[in-house]
Length: 318
Ligand code: R5P
Image (cartoon, rainbow, N blue to C red; front, side, top):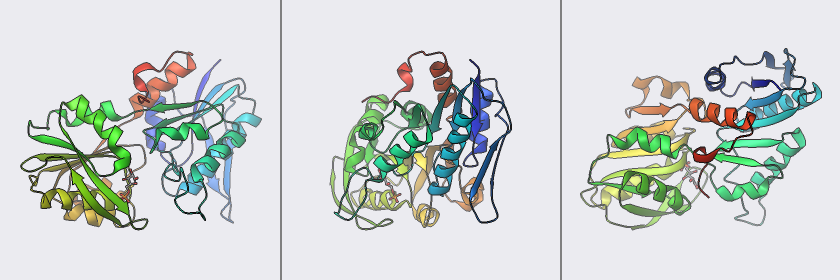
């Protein structure tokens, strides 16, 4: 069986890097829009009998990227591929994993069902908002983690007086992993979401006075969570030397403006979604952004899956 890597338009740079890591080039395909805005895809390479991996994070605009992914899967399936895997470094709708109010959908479940309808045999994702989302999927979900990569990236800059801080109760397990890997204590900021872009801090547990915080989260969207946590930590007497670590940096809405106002030493993240142009240009943000590439992690995972080998250390602990 041959191995093929296919990409939509969400992140061709990462997809190409993954293919390169595997010693391949991306399978030729067209992904465009019809004049009425419909997504048009067409494979321009034979995938019959192949083990196909479609690399497509569902970062903004999530709906467009999701539909491209599903149409690519349908095209591969109808072209006779043997098996098709969705490689979704950032999985959108993961935060809609339960109903907070009665009138809401369970978006994560619906999107997981769409992956099944698209014909995917398996899904590969990185640092999902909640590991429990696995239960939404009818097919196997391989949940990889960028935490070791990110912990290594900050290790040399972390001093003995640092403290790992989770800005959200939902990220406590994630923060515990960073604390363990870096040998640091842990503090917890308890936040309450007011709206899609606004949060309110309800409390802080742990000692941060005189310490340099390492604020860790699964993702930064509008940076409201990071901004609220930073203000709380400064009020509590932490050093104005704050590093933010997040697996996914969407940086939408007011995110850049908010980050500019914070005394951040660095924002360390991955390339799970394509960075907005305003961030890719370093002068646009006062805070240095370091995006560690997931190409090696994803490429290694694909290589092992293709060879039916266990993913071992690549997988997020349960
Ligand atoms: C929330 O539950 C997540 O772990 C993140 O804290 C949140 O999604 C970040 O969003 P924002 O940057 O918009 O506050």
